[in-house]
Image 1: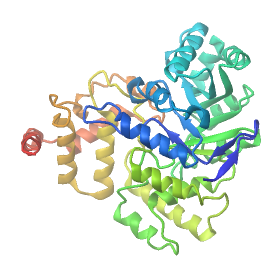
Image 2 (image 1 turned 90 degrees about the vertical axis):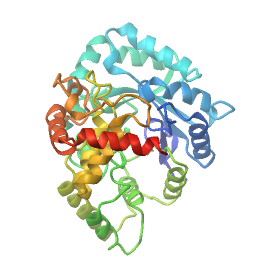
Image 3 (image 1 turned 45 degrees about the vertical axis):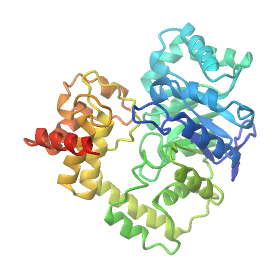
Image 4 (image 1 turned 120 degrees about the vertical axis):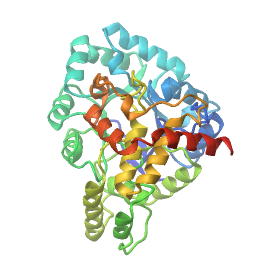
Amino acid sequence: MLYRQMPKNEDELSILGFGCMRLPVKEDGTIDEERARNQVRYAIDNGVNYVDTAWPYHMSASEPFLGRALADGYREKVKLATKLPSWLLESREDMDKFLNAQLERLKTDHIDYYLVHGLAGKVWDKLEALGVTDFLDKAKADGRIVNAGFSFHGSIEDFKRIVDAYPWTFCQIQYNFMDEKHQAGTEGLEYAASKGMGVIIMEPLLGGNLASPVPAEVEDIWNEAAVKRTPAEWAFRWVWNHPEVTVVLSGMNKESQVEENLKIADEAYPNSLTEAEIQLISRVEKKYCQLMKIGCTGCEYCMPCPSGVNIPECFSIYNDLHMFGNLEGSRFTYAVSMSGVFTNTKPGGFASQCIECGQCMEKCPQGLKIPDLLKEVAEELEGPDLEQRLAMAKQLFANK
């Protein structure tokens, strides 16, 4: 495992961090605790020392799970990160209430890296007026948190303003080879680093979209490389190639993912990609831009939808349709996903259920016009034979 130093406190952090937003789950959607615990502990045993969670992950089950997973001496082996749920705060007192609850859920007396979650310009303005800087100062002074930071989904102008508003130790931004000019982007990465801040990276694989499966047109480009690597490795190495990056989070939920990512993190030095390799990745980025229709990362911040639409799943299947061009396959996958056969519930989650209330747009970190996009999804993936496909899906899986 390679390590990089957090500039302001000189902590040696593993370049790979374990993100606990996409843990393995059972058929009913709850965390598969045995598998998840084994994966987290295996990663720690092999050098990972930064573990990240948040109040809403896995419908608020991630923090309590992690508190249990880090028993038996594992808490002492890691720097633990979690986040203040900014959208739930209505007063200065709420901040202490949530932090104290998180300490209890995580079974710890301090949070090593505490982030104000999901900032953008207006959110920051509200929290600043409520007294968030006073809260952070006092929580650091009394030892409940060690380092203060923020995660960000907004414009580069607001990012710089927030960076300059408080003596942050670190920040967390979305960054991958598709997002150089999106949100904070490369400009934000370099700006934060110039202020002496550590930078934690989320969504290095764009919600898994850059890993697998890979469109044939993209695979053809990867195959041109002199050194053969998986798409996931190319994406990780591109991020780690930037010396300003401190830690890259990966939402691992398969044992094979943990193994692969640990191997990459043994070798991914900054400035180690050749110019030819950087140009190859740039060509892949351009090809993806041609193929992808919706820049959804599957973060689920838009959920739950008051009308029951499964927004991330709708967008995932829609992107697959446009990357792979298999209309019938995508329509059948859509029917299976929305049929309720896996959860033993009645059909639901369809894009056509959207009533355009707009609540999802207020929460979306990517700024997507979700209601308009759901209309496109419904038009292409539903159609007059949807009921027939739903019946086929139920019959097929009922016979297994």
